[in-house]
Image 1 (cartoon, rainbow, N blue to C red):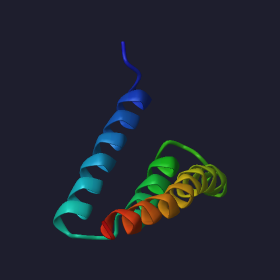
Image 2: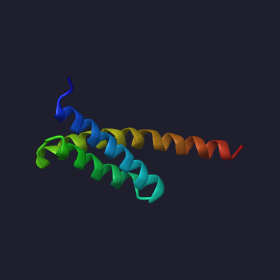
Image 3: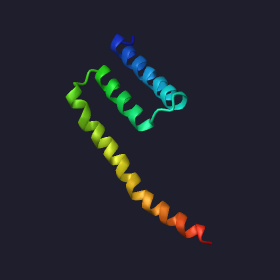
Image 4: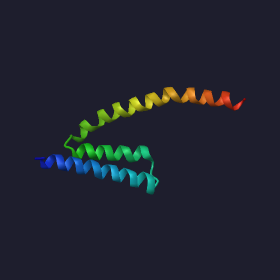
Amino acid sequence: MIESHSIFLLSAALTAIIGLILLIAVSKLNPFITRFWFSLGLAVAAGMPFTACIPPFELGMGTTLGHIAIIAPYCCATCKTTRGK
């Protein structure tokens, strides 16, 4: 049988996903800010202390933005060379 805590976590995750979709697609809120607040809220709902929520978020977001920062100059350089042709 499924524990009540597991059901709570699944329903919290489902609520967060639906909330993200609604706030980003319908309300046109900034996706970065929306994901930030929902990820913190879901971590706290899962039982993490608030002070322990920030380091994993920084690590994940830093890794993602680090990859984007590496790819973006390449894409811009490629666009500039293809426009001139």
